[in-house]
Image 1 (cartoon, rainbow, N blue to C red):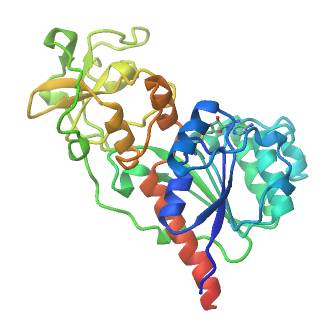
Image 2: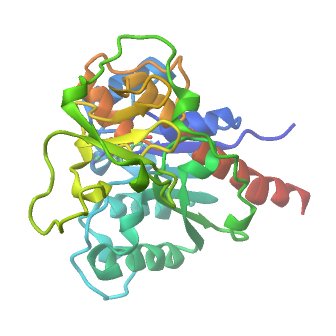
Image 3: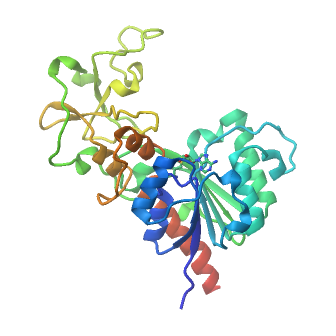
Length: 334
Ligand SMILES: C[S@@+](CC[C@H](N)C(=O)[O-])C[C@H]1O[C@@H](n2cnc3c(N)ncnc32)[C@H](O)[C@@H]1O
């Protein structure tokens, strides 16, 4: 019988990694999260109340495991270019990850972060991370992946870093899925919040085009335009309008769902109904690939914040599947 692959869920949030890895048959043996509201949601869904602040947890308290998963908060490293490895990262949450790696020696490390991590602090942060993992004995691969390539109607770019003790993870083997659009995931009924016609402006059809990202900007709420530096005749460009006021067509893809937007001001234009409404909280969770049975925080602003902080399930699921295939199954074959 094959041994079940185990993992730990650090900076667990509402368990996006856990959901994805469990779906692939792996077993979670430890989780840590500092935020009480997240911990409650996590317990409701997975039946386990995560341990708290990772800085207070001794690595010896963590059972042995195969894969370390962490979507950690990004912080600059104060010591620049000393090239000592993990000592250079002291005082940051990445240091906590390294401390656990050093003691537990997992076969695989899977880290996730915003795309901006690559250029953060003049590339110092990213270079230090890669260098440190290599010094800890890992072969490191990384790539920016976009959730829209995994059958989810959201453009969300994230850097995925995979470290392996044996072999090297190959991102080229990741399988992409057919594009889907916002219209494919909409709820058929619910308490929808529509805008009155006088509350928004649709832009002239001649300016409407699908952006390379798949987004189709069609209009804006009648407030909150950037005034400074806006050239005349550029009012039809989405970037002129503040993000919470932009309206996107359901025929396209949704922009990244951020964690800072706690009142859920995501506006969509329903081409068939010729109407504008707010995306529902359910639809936000679907745009992150969460199943409808997932139990959300009953406090709406918490629920918006938590989903904006999470990972996209089908994207992480495909990474998990490839890790299992490339690192664990090939190891058994070979
Ligand atoms: C970007 S979110 C990760 C979300 C997660 N990947 C998910 O799928 O929901 C980072 C998380 O780290 C948590 N966090 C920050 N500092 C922490 C600490 N010292 N110990 C444990 N968790 C911490 C935050 O509360 C937040 O939920």
